[in-house]
Image (cartoon, rainbow, N blue to C red; front, side, top):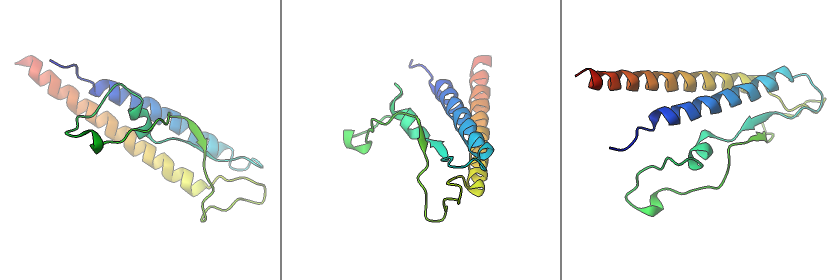
Length: 126
């Protein structure tokens, strides 16, 4: 029987979501700081690629691997996000959208773990 790695994966995503929420909160807190550059973390997929958890594939070419590590990076300025006169690159609307994204991802993560836990308890009770 192979070990169940869903709980480990959910834990890693929860940690990643915590880091991302802290970075976004820092961006919002520094929205009026002159020359502050908005930051974000690399996507969770890069964390997955650095774990021992591998997805099953029928052919080696189905999934590509990237050597990127999960880390905090400066957000590149987009055309619709102008650099303010003070040199600040924080767009409050974008940061608020990110907080909504983080909240949804956390709720999905918690819901999946709860459902999987209930399923595991059902198999043990029989």
